[in-house]
Image (tube, rainbow, N blue to C red; front, side):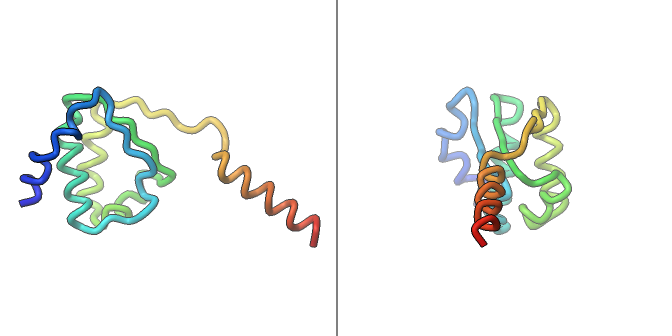
Amino acid sequence: MEWLIIERVPEVFLPSALVVDEVGYQPLERAGANLVFQVISKRYEEGSIVLTSNKTFSEWGQVFGDEVLATAILDRLRRHCEMIPPQRPSYRLKNRLKANEQENEVA
């Protein structure tokens, strides 16, 4: 049933690069995790996928609600990938830490 949904969403397969931002920001329910797997499975050999996440790979089982499913997704993503780890702290984290310092100075 869910596979039919993916077949009807050609927009996912048209762009030369599919960007998926902030994987793990919200945990996915089983149906959503299955759809992500289907998209990755259909696309990983066909076009580029740019994916960002603040979660380590070991945390992806929690994000997708299933260790086996998370491993299958990672296997496909890592097959033809170049991983680019951040070279410096997140600007959001940097700004939050700066705000905390300012709050502590005032107190």
